[in-house]
Length: 517
Ligand code: TAP
Image 1 (cartoon, rainbow, N blue to C red):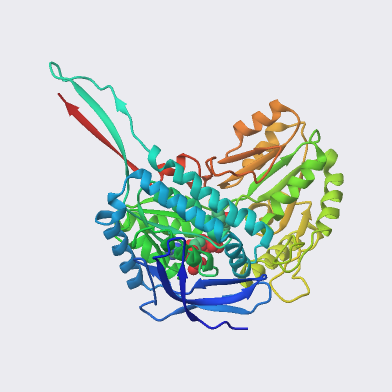
Image 2: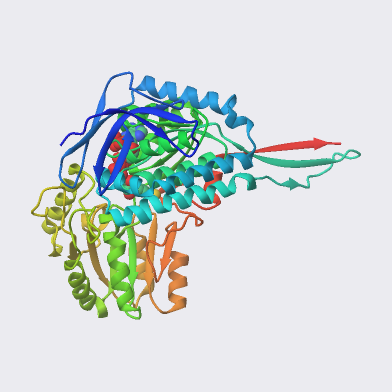
């Protein structure tokens, strides 16, 4: 079914404000939802210069949701120039930090008022299970905006006692300043949440932004653009450009007026972006990239909890989770019992329409990704790992893939090293007689995003946490991220942090002022 694009109007809490756009209005999930389908540049919804569009597919039933405008290089240029003007001359540059915070709180309130609509849009566009979309994709996004709104008027420098040029006296002070126009490029697994993690810190710091969501699911970003206009964020401060990475994303990395690029995505594209940022104008860059996070489960763990968390570490958000445990090391004495329980629990996962409240596992995000997962499993079987469950396309319409479990995975195997980004559990055995050896094996990857350990032995947990080379370590839990805690990887998982106070540094520069008196 194809939904017609209509001229729509939106009115927010501020009754004097009316936003007009071309978009889609439809009944879905027992509610009326509507969202724009145009680019958002300088406070207005507009068509792309090229007339090119992206066709969006609902992964649950493979139907076309709608077409949205796809940004060209000249659209990127317009958006960047609008963001530059807003940064240098607009209301945004004149209001106080506290007023900036108030605007971001208002935006968060509007997101809260529209949370069911946002979660529904996320579900049809990305296949996220609705209940999870409500709690995590949208819920954590709202928390993120509130967390960073609170930081706006608390960003300050220091006073530093430096040597005096006697007989005069001297003092140095530092100021934390916004960088200017920032670009954000994000992936498809948590579309609204990835936008929020980066953009909330970026705006709290006082920058303006041009953002490119993933081409396959840009709809919550466009709905967010509408809400930002209704919240009264001045024109040009937020610009949203759906488009392809090769055209729109690359033009952002190359643009000489963009001073910072925040990226989340694959290591491969991260490398391309870092090169482009260096070659164009040495723009500051932060990269949240791929992962193959190890989870080590010792025999003295709380096994019920380890099985529950072990499953969530792999299957949460259908495995489309950057910190997903890419490899489980289970101590040999509990290995068979762990596998038996994990298989039994995985068989109980209800796969189905992500809008149904009883569904725990929805379709993969898009077809190419599902096909990649099927190939991943075939390769694992070929190289001799034991596929004990799932790993096939489910026998129904939509991009459904049966959660898979592999055992007998050896260190040299391709599936032990490569990220699947899907619901595929990879289990290897270890012996706790040699803690050094399992830590060496867990660290034997070029990635360093997250890690986890289950044990009741505090010393062992702390030694693991000290020696594992990953930006996040979970002890007796997994996936426990929070807006106040810094998040980001080591090695080829990139650098720079999202969330927490540290994320602000990614979008600030420090100026040192030295005074003589
Ligand atoms: P990518 O293929 O790297 O795409 C990420 C974004 O970059 C998309 O918006 C993409 O555009 C864009 N892009 C592609 N080529 C570009 C170029 N030359 N210049 C600028 N932008 C370009 O990753 P993905 O497949 O969307 O996401 C999966 C990967 O992201 C996984 O490896 C996963 O681990 C990683 N990830 C990491 C994290 C964290 S926090 N570390 C979080 C989520 C995901 P298109 O829309 O056209 O593809």
